[in-house]
Image (tube, rainbow, N blue to C red):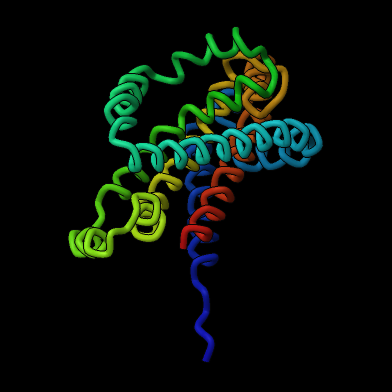
Length: 242
């Protein structure tokens, strides 16, 4: 007999419990709706502003996926270079650690000043935020080759490139998967921060606009759309890495 997949049921149950608790807080505290609207009002805002939300979400998704792809590609390339070259490790790794000590979010106004209010500044912010986790996780995995495999490569006189791509990279794929999981968690925050700092489009811009106009329901609706995008992205990456 085919086993029933209970993961969707658990997700639906968690969603139902969360909405029930949300509505219970609204009823019990009698909080004004401009501070905390109920889920029904937020759902109505989602329905009434579906076209507006879709337009801004498209801009956010494009920046998010572009920055994510660029950051992962750059992180993988850097980790491979560090694993292959002792000179690169000596020169680049201290620079990476120093760069990570500077909060990327603090650089968001500067990047917006340099690159403008368009997509470029948001893509660079996302790329910088996820670059270090991917690089660090993948590099650590590349350098943790089990001693028996390292001895076998030495006995067979494997070249550094063959040792890297035939032994180290396959062994480091789980570490890369961990880096990707971190990347998809950080990336939505990064793109929203970029849109908050300066943008004329995107869900972050729409949230600031709704907040300034007192449209709390629309602000929560934008947040829900962003959360849904983040969950879908995480589920896609989780399926990919498995």
